[in-house]
Each structure stands twice: as C-alpha cells, then as structure tokens.
Amino acid sequence: MLRPSLAAFERPITPPFRVRRGHATLGSERWSDARGAEVPEASPRGTYLIIAETLRSEIQAEQGGDTLPSEADLMDSHGVSRNTIRRALKVLEADGVVESAPGIGWRVVRGGDRRSLAERMTDVIKEDSLSVGDTYPSEAKLCERFGASRTAVRRVLAQMEGNGLLATVHGKGRTVRALPASLARP
Image (cartoon, rainbow, N blue to C red):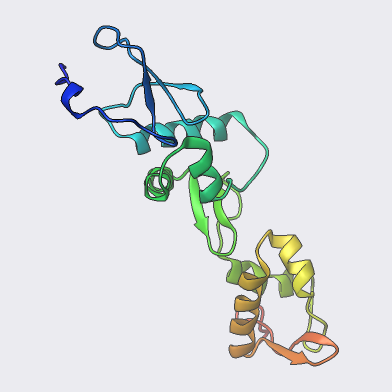
C-alpha cells in the first residue's frame, strides 16, 4: 500500500507523539516514542489493537499479579491517550482476558472467582460460619481479603445493611443481623 508524501504538511512533532527517524525507502522508516525507544510503525489495524495484543502477551507471560496497572500508568508506558487504552482493554474484556472491577481497576481473569464483590462479601457469613449476632470482619480486613478499595467495600457494606443482613454498632463495628436467603434455615 503506497502512502502519499506528507512533505507539504510536515511540522515539528513534540513528545509524546511518535517521531520518524531518517528518510529511507517506503516501509523502512523507523519510529521512536517520547523516550527515544524504537517502536514499530503504526498499524493499519489500529493502535489500540496493537496495545491489546501487547497486554495479552504480557498477561500470558506473567503468572503473578491479578490487577493491571492503572489506565494512567498504561497511558504513560504506551504513549497514547486514555481512550486508546480503554479501547484496548475493552477488546481484552470481550475476549474474556480481563474484567473491570469497580474500586479495583482492571483485573486479569484466571478462571477463578468471577462473582461480584457484593456476592463474595455476602458469602463471608457462610465461609466464616458466622451466625446472627456475630461480629462481621472490619473494612480493613475486607479490603485486604478481596483486594478492593475501601470505597467499594463501604458501598457493599451499606448495601448489606440496607438489605438487613448487617447492623452497625457504633464503637463495636458491624454484626450479622440476619442470614442471607441461601443460608436461612427453614
């Protein structure tokens, strides 16, 4: 595919945009990012697809970490806009590689627990064998246990209180007020 000459439209390009190095024959140009690192030529398929494939290969190579870096960190590392990063993440989400987790960010799907934070926090009552009147774990312990932000945990706790599962005793924390429907005994 031939590209038209952009000589008439050339102007100085400043970081974080790609900068063409040298004037060689068609297809042999070299591009570099804001840090000066060489990057492949822009793809006709779209930059977001290239980033999605890069993230996919990084996820497959790295068996550790369950959460991806923040969108801002991904923007900086790839030198693209937030919208481009979001499009790449949506491609991976559609393929079942990652999922958006409110209060956490983007999480790698490893075939493990895919339940919502509300479902997992409700199941704590069963998992910890709690009964009516027992103390429910603290916000800090729940944040650590589920890897979620305090805001997300508080939101679910408020929902559980609204549903009548928990009661707040000031100075004592939260206690189990009722068992979830799945645990209620007839």
